[in-house]
Length: 197
Image (cartoon, rainbow, N blue to C red; front, side, top):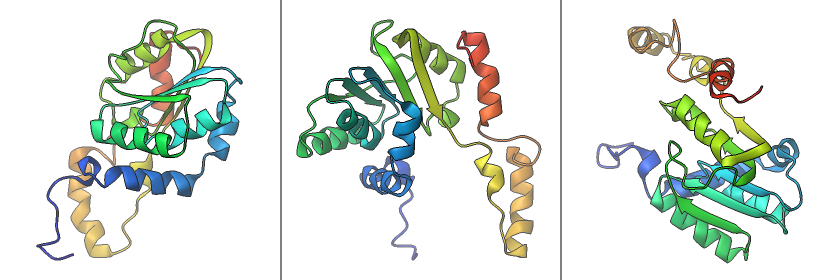
């Protein structure tokens, strides 16, 4: 990549990010997610951190009698998600801009809450989990999928890069701890909020 091609703005906040999220969703597929999510035929479902809305739309297609809401803090993602749902003629999906730390829904609104690849990026996870619990009805389910120690899984093959990255890894805490929560750390956070494992 030449200097003139380099975009100093982080790619996750670019206009192209929803397209990348769509490609990522196609690579992952949604069949396994839907199988583990196991929504009821008329459930009200919230997809928190919906990004491009690919999973929200998949859930909506699987629940023609249900209602599915996608929420993300990025207005460009929500705009993209709305346009895709309209183009695919999905009428039971709605999309809204919102904050995971203050969900814009009344208590007990949803039968099922879905969140994938979100909580590892949220600094105030307990507050987010408390909000998840608040908007999920009593007896409802909260299903979160997050990377587990993904920062530790990357191993630089080139010896010079490995040597140069070592002080950085130590500085930011990858070796001794980790930047983001692993699944086991997340499980320790759900109990104080009152979410059973």
